[in-house]
Each structure stands twice: as structure tokens, then as C-alpha cells.
Image (cartoon, rainbow, N blue to C red; front, side, top):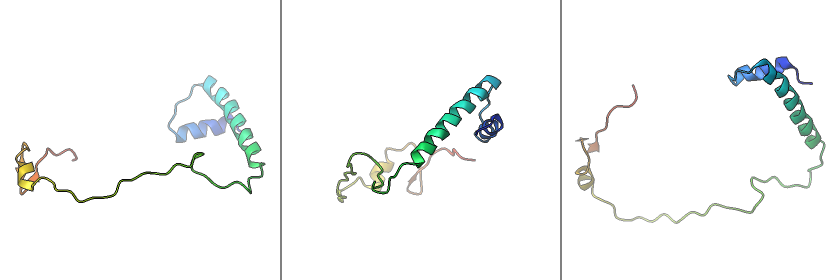
Length: 94
């Protein structure tokens, strides 16, 4: 059984501020969710293979290919500022 105290504790861990009427409603909702999970735990899934997706999908990657690129000096000509062969940008982290 889930108590209102449990819901308040979980809400504080999640840094969620709840009103009193929300706590009551969420207590009932969480109880229903946990009851459903308990029903799922009683199912025999010994013959079911674990899956990450219901469809047989797999990633399609292109082959890596070495291709010519721009020369460093040519790229640096496009920059606003440069220093020692690198782009110079404003500091964003203190």
C-alpha cells in the first residue's frame, strides 16, 4: 500500500511541489500503477526473448571513406579570429 507520505517523499526527491489535492490523486494513481506491475510480474515469460524493439530494426551505417578536405590555412581564412593555427572563440565557461 502506498501512503501519502511515500508520495510526498518521492515528490521531494524529484523536486516536485505538489498541492494537497494532487497528493491524494497521485497516491491512488501510483497504487493502480504498482498493482498493474504486480500483475505483470505474475506472467510466465520464460519463453519470451528479451527485445529492445518489437520490430527487427537495425542501424544502417555508411562505410567510412577517406575524402579530401580543405586545407587548414584555407579554412582559417574564413574565421573571424585565429590563434596558433586554431579558431579563436569567446570564452563561454568560467
